[in-house]
Length: 100
Image (tube, rainbow, N blue to C red; front, side, top):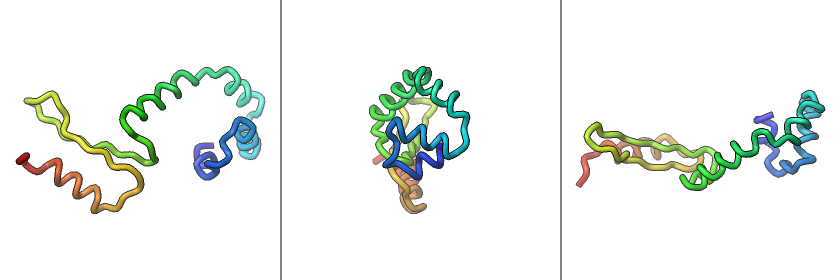
């Protein structure tokens, strides 16, 4: 289902979800029951709020961090979107370089 939803990001309305589940041969009655119960809605809302606070507005979003046993703060950076190796290397090099 994850792959199908990701591939069909313009078709994520409630009726679309049901169509996707049927196309994949899922147990439609059980799927509808789960959606209607909203059992996981609070968890999803919390995850969305956490992502917004961290400015993780795209997929993928990477967080790179460096800790110091003598300092409780984390030196870190965020990389958004699919990026080349050079972007990650530059970010890691910046994190590992001595502060000026």
